[in-house]
Image (tube, rainbow, N blue to C red; front, side):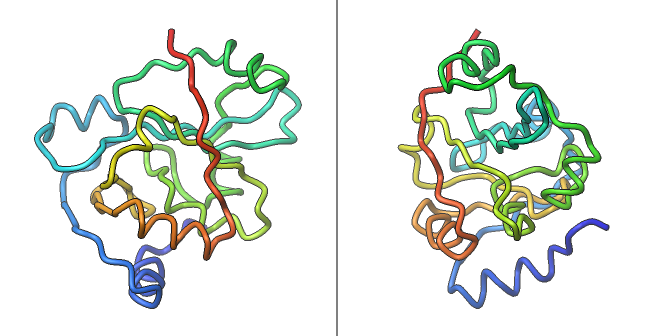
Length: 166
């Protein structure tokens, strides 16, 4: 069962986190978002749910919407076995969202803290970030300060790293 964005909205209100909402047709990829609306304030993101080769460790990797990551180099850099994309089953199990609906906000659903958050150092300088609220028909714009409040609540501290590109 997938997560409910109304519970997410209630939590953000409880945490005194504000966000701006943009409604749009379903956007399954950052490329689809390019076609819809490029001129939005804030940092547009690509959200990748990865797993190590053994499937024992999981990572939510956040980078610029137009960056092509070099997963082989990233694996080596982080001292991990080969990184690859996690299945939709793993995505549902750990983050409780469907493919195309991943964002940092899905970490709320990782109650066991089994997913590590890596944020590309090239984007973390921004102050406003685009996040799907468990579905891809809306984008919520959140400030970095509010995201940090959210991360403190979920106990997922972002690890700001250099993410190599191809």
